[in-house]
Length: 618
Image 1 (cartoon, rainbow, N blue to C red):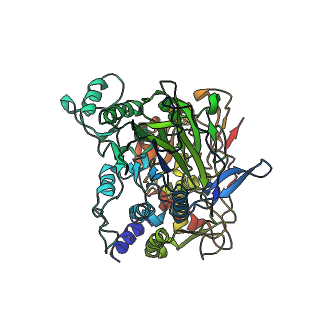
Image 2: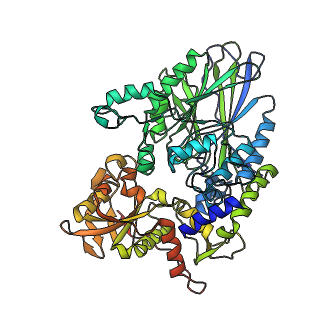
Image 3: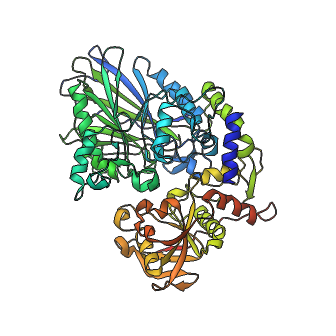
């Protein structure tokens, strides 16, 4: 099937919204006494912010495409959301409501990568086309912008036809983005004496490397300065998480160094300051979880003790006070929070929901005399992109143009299901769809000796829904729907691990890089284990409960384990998997998934949702 996809790419190359609720109150009073109202001494500005679209030009079906809000009785209710043409309609409305303000549309990374077939079939050029049409002004890179390596990212930013598949649009060769991509903390790796590459880390011999990195230029511009009609200037610093190498296949980032976020922000905030740019916004592809579950979650207001649970909290607390607000991404969780900077002054830190489900409308004033952003004027509103919102015609025409070119491949039936099979939107770490995918991976790699399979949670990108998304009929899984679940085209690697190594891998779900934020693996039917979250670190895995085919793990024997290429290179902190031996690759993840669906289901015998009971939580 993957060969068919590549072939199809070549053939194709030839051929009303629920607006919310939250208004973050004005921050502490400005020292200059500005009213923050856009009076004669200030210029009002609007930032419309999005993040983590991942090429989802259509609304994502199922729980993964929903957001939570409070119902009339205060109860949580789910609302389906998304669709870039609907997002464009709401952005137009928001700009109209802010008439008189200078309006800019910004993004915090992962706008492409991990994309559905509609965009991925053409190497995400459809998403760029749609974003240009809706009026995106600037974006930071995210980790998924590196899914196909720095050369492909450079092509996306600057233009040119794909080196293997050629021009996606024969009528208009790809000319790059109309908006700047910013990558302030992403530098090319250079060789040290003796021919060894500098690691760019804060350990041991890396000091010289950091100094050398500081003298080099980022692979894309570090910041963008927008000059407003009145002469005021706003600086946007864009960067991605320093952990990008651990969340992207290692082969795609080997030639790059990802510097510390705070050090990078401070460096370029100072540079902007020397250029006289006093209003500074950081677009940072790093995030956190908010205290609440609703799309309008807030924290840190009026001295409240609630905080963001994740790296961006510390970054926002430590980064230069010259930065006035943060637009963030990566965690896919919407929030509008207040964090105190090193000078003790509050500043907004916001994120929208992923997949185009919400956007954030930020407003602030700029002091015309000093050029400073008046923090006391800063506020944010969240908006849901509900599926009953009318589609914006210009953006919709762009999307439908690309859809027509991929429709035949996308609509091909590949299997049948009897009910929804939740994956990305499942409430628990072990998901029914994760169970199904890992079972498929074992079946597809039996010839390589596979006994069990492990899958990172992020390898499941959506849900399978029973209700038809098109004309295929309820319960029919199309190739496009399967692709949306498994879009990365990862080779599957079957390796030999000792029983001791297998236990070590399972412990790494809760220890090392994953101790603060566990990364629970999806596991095939051959594996069982218990977890006690009242414990800490590696002890959360109850090792004496681990069973393979009903038998306790024998540390002295070996097991054949299948994982995707990303995990095989130690992704997501699973470094023990790099030690696996006798590696064989006989297929890819999407091929395994579609092959299993075809071979194990029919209209009369559809696949039922797995029970997701392989991990027991104590």
